[in-house]
Image (cartoon, rainbow, N blue to C red; front, side):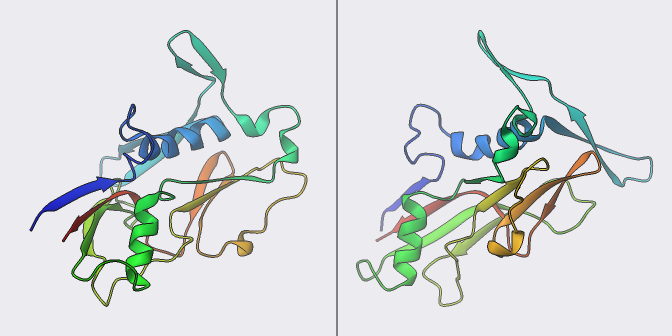
Amino acid sequence: MSLLSTGTFQAGHSNYPGSQEWSQTALVTYLYGLASRTERDRTGHLLITWVPVEEHVWGSKRVRSGFFNYENAEHISAVMSTREADIWKFNRMGLKAGFGAAGIKMVRVGTRYVPDPNVSEPEPFDLEVHSPDYTEEWIEGLEIYHNPNALHPLDPDAFPGAVHHVFDEGKIVTYSNGDNMFGTMTFFSV
């Protein structure tokens, strides 16, 4: 049996491994012009503060942060992004739908959100895609960043399975009703 691997970090990004995973974190900072800083208080509770980010620098290139504050950005209701829209999502969904050669086994590994306000790191997981208990929806991995200045705000109920980010009283608040994955890899064997 051979074990092969690939993942969302490789699909179409061979020059920049991990770029799909990294870009999601950078996107929230660019859109809202804020970055989170975490620390623990003396009792060990997690504290998150949001600090302004004026610009993004890559070599000699400089880009002003806070896209949602740009002139005319009020015409953008939201920005949608996903780190899971790759060939491996299609392979997993296809396997669950009964496509593929007999005997293929897939394992999805990565990290996921922990629904505890005092936890700052995601937890690792591994799931057997070929298991009868494995489920995955097409919308999983979709993240929607709502523009606080939008003339026509996007209704979050239009995308109930997505992760929603909103600006609220100086901070970014994230809402989800699912099992949020943070970049995964899919391993398969034949």
